[in-house]
Image (cartoon, rainbow, N blue to C red; front, side, top):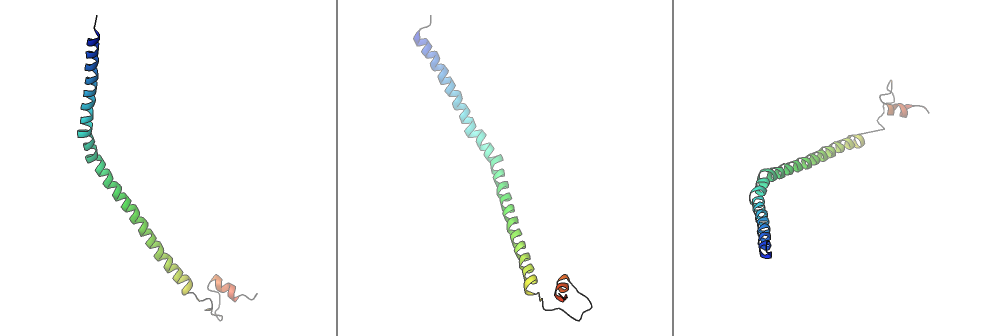
Length: 106
């Protein structure tokens, strides 16, 4: 028969072996695998993300600038350069739909 002390020694060897291999795995994971992932995958993905963020932000700013300039010229030409009283009454025919309405004899 096996004595209690022998069972305790076997259990101690099993538990210490289990924790030893856990320690070896964690040491490999944190000292070899994780730095490899961070250096060769994490940093390039971070740089690509920063570049994409800048490009999307830059595209948004460019769109806003172009839209604002276009809106400025549209408002400038539509409101400030329009003259609804500049209608030639002696002309032979209407030039635009607005002049048709203004020249009608209602």
